[in-house]
Image (cartoon, rainbow, N blue to C red; front, side):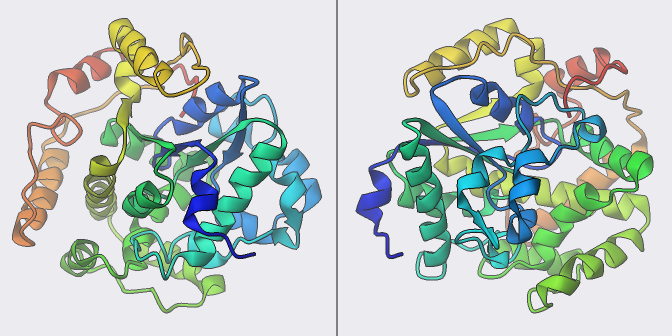
Amino acid sequence: MAIDKAVTSKYSALFIHSAQRSSSTYIWEAFRSLEYYYCYYDPFNEMLLDMDSEKAANFEVADQLGHKLSLPYFFEYQPLVSTGVSGFYDEFSYSNFFVNDPHVLQLQHEYIARLLFEASLHHRQAVLGFSDSSGRVRWMRWQYPTSMHVLVVRNFIQQWISSMNQLSDFNNPRFVAAPIAYLAAAKEDELAISLRDALEIPRLSAVPFNRFFKAVDNYVLSLPVLEQFKRFIAFQIIRFIRARPYVDMVIDVDRLSLDTIYRKNLIDKLSLRLPAVPAFDDAHASLHSVDMAPELEQAVQSVLDIFQSVNENIDQDDYRLDFTSSIWQEAIRHANPVVVFN
């Protein structure tokens, strides 16, 4: 299926770029509830490699992840399922995370084109809710220039705690390990490679896919918790750096939950580009009580020092990096045990 740039540019879509445990499923599901959209959950998720009709029609883990879904996660992929989702290859998940070379990503381009075309057959606009696209947003912006691209961000300590809760409560290491896996598989991106070397993360870009996750899990779970945290934070910073210049706007879920004026302004901005926008009036990011221990502050500072050592200066006043800032402190003051979405 040969598809050129002109064909895919014909179909406008909403690209939601996020990371795991950043509340992006809530954003995606809010659009899914509107009849104007055909919404694909996590189009680079490795589960799509062996997706079958039954799983696409029924897969749910809402009790574990705290999501309220109108339909099962992968429901919209059903027309594309044969042996796995048509056009999906394993390198889309981790190996290509930091790749922006259009020649390398031709198969990935054709795959996304299939998704956009399928949505058009339903007479709806596609919404693609990515959790693993941030390192290649530059390529997506160039490839899909008529589409809208947004970046979802969340207080990274809240992300970390949410990820750790998945490990402790459900024995699910994916959300702690995945950010480190992207760095382990990094290629092409010099900053990502430099960070991997500085943090002594093993290079796993050549490991066969069926052994990749086991190798990552073994490495991550062998680390002290504070060392896991440092690598997790380093990834969150670089994914923000790589995505931010190429998106139309940033959606801060902490502010979306706490600030009604921010929410109204966000809806107004989205309405300029999209046929319909959710009200987001039930937005409520789960907030976990945080002990701002000196060890955490020291760990964050050590990561910022690593960025400086590889000639990448980070603005520590950016509230996404400085957890002493007013918006993060406001989120912490409102911390409570209620989990609406994670």
